[in-house]
Every structure is written in structure tokens, then in C-alpha cells.
Image 1 (cartoon, one colour):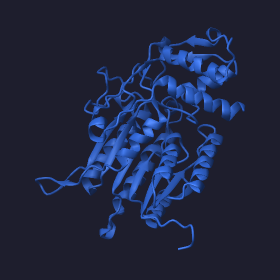
Image 2 (cartoon, rainbow, N blue to C red):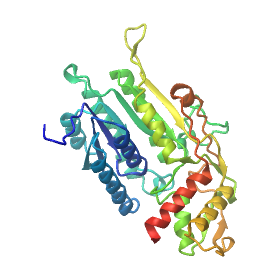
Image 3 (tube, helix red, strand yellow):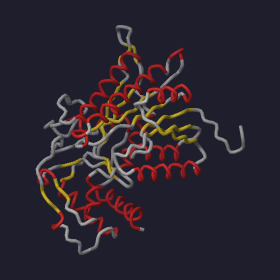
Image 4 (cartoon, rainbow, N blue to C red):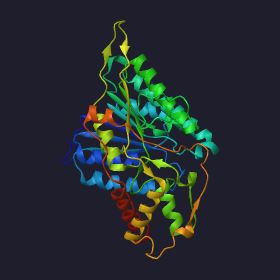
Length: 362
């Protein structure tokens, strides 16, 4: 082993590594783990500004160069490409897989359904098959598959807060349907092949270098360009906004807490499968959210103090695929992992506004 080379005892695979959540998870793992080889894959889709994805990868490379405890490798490719996924598993033999690669967005799924089937269904199937065959030849294989689900699976459920015990068989968008399909597919593979798997239902994730199609980011772009922002359902919506650092901490804790493999009375595996909500457990009114965002944009110097916000706001009806409320019951996450997201909306939006100023204006 050459001087300065790190001996890696385990390999983690993070799909969607240039995405918002994926990149922040990789950064956290590089900062806090040692002797781990972190493999990232991303197709670098142009669904939104690829420049932001490149920025995230630059931050990861910088961290990897400075954090000498673990090793980082990035591969450009799609999880929908079976050959690429099979080669990764064959060559690197990941012990933990975190599948965050997916086509996101509720409204985009109405106009561009094909990419959701390709990435969210076929891509996830490829991951499951690779996990299954990782045990071939009595190999240790994948110890834990963690995958991204979404609060969208709750659809128009009227009972709040949303619990993982609730029925979720009435999706109101194709995006939600693909995420619920992921949960069902993972459960089946856990039962058939004893693959420990955990699905995480994320609730409205936000923060610096986030997705430009999310409301807080797109509102900021439009206000800065003197365009009008549309506030859906006439402002009568509530969202459980969850700061990115809380999401990452939740994922990291879950990664190391795989469901136990247990044999049932019939001699067959009891599916080692679990699902958790990761949300702030505190829904915010959309109008209050807009007001706080505007205040923080002024505070950061993104917008002028005398900016006429009322002239740039328009209340509009609910959009197809949207739901009026998201609200996470996080008691199971707190009970099993001792963690509950706690970052307040103002603190999170302040950090976003500061990043936005530095990234776009300084």
C-alpha cells in the first residue's frame, strides 16, 4: 500500500450522488467515517440546472481531498442501465446501498411520465436484483438497502399526522405511485431473498444548493427576476418542511440500523423490511413560509429592503397532483433511532438565503 493510501474495510454505494440529498449524505459520510470506500453514481440529468449538480460534486471532491479517512469514487451513469449496476456490484461489492436516485417532482410526472418509469421503477428493480445476487455463492452481500420514498405516498389522507401505519393505496400522482411501488417491491424482495431494507418517506426537503424546482428556490429566482410567484390553493396549504441536515442525520442513523433477519415459524424469512417518516413534525402554513422566506432574502441582501412583495404574488387554485397538507408522525424514528428533526424553518431558510447570495450574486 502506497504512502497516504487509505485501506477500506467496507464499501457504500450512494445512487443519485450529485442530487440534493445524495451529495449532502456523501459529504457527511466523508467527514465522519473512516476506512470506507464511497461509490457515487448519478446520470447528471438536465431536469434542473446541471451546474448545481457539478457544484455539489466539486464540494464532495474538495472534501474527499481534505478528509483522508475514506475514499470517494464517482461514476456517471443511470441506475436504469442494468449493465452499469451489475458491474458496480460485481467490482466494488457494496455492503450498504443507499438508493436516492429517482426522477423527482409531482407536476413533472404529469407531463413527462416516461422518465419516472425508467428511473423510479426499472432503476429500482435493477438495484433490487443486484442486491439479491450479491449473496450468490454464499457471499456476505448487501447488509442493508436504504431507499428514498416520499410523503407523496400519503395522497389525500385526511388523518394527520401521517403515520407509516396508515393505508397508502390512493396516490394522486404518478410520482407518488412509483414511490409506493418501490416500497412494495422492496418488501417483496426482503421476503423472498432476506434483504434488509428500509424505506424513508421524506417530507419537503430544503436547504442550500437544493433543487431549483422546489418552491423556496423557484420563488427566490422569480422574485429576483421581478416575476410573479404563484401561491397554490390560495395559500391554504401546509407543508412539513425538513432541513437537509436533519434528513442526512436521519439517513445516517438508519444506515447502521438494518432490520434484523428473523426466521418465521414456517421456516421462511420474516421480511426484514421497515419504513420511516423523516419530517419536521411541524407543518407550516404556505403564506407564513412565503413571509419568512421574503424576510430572509431581504436580510441576506438577495432582495432590496423596499421590494414590493405584494405586487409579485398571486393566489391560485390547487394544482393536479398536489395535496393540501403534509405532516409527519416521526415517533417511530425517534423511538428506534433516538432522532427527531429539529431545525426551525427560519434557521433553514436563513442558511439557504445566505448560500444563494454567495452562489449567484457574490
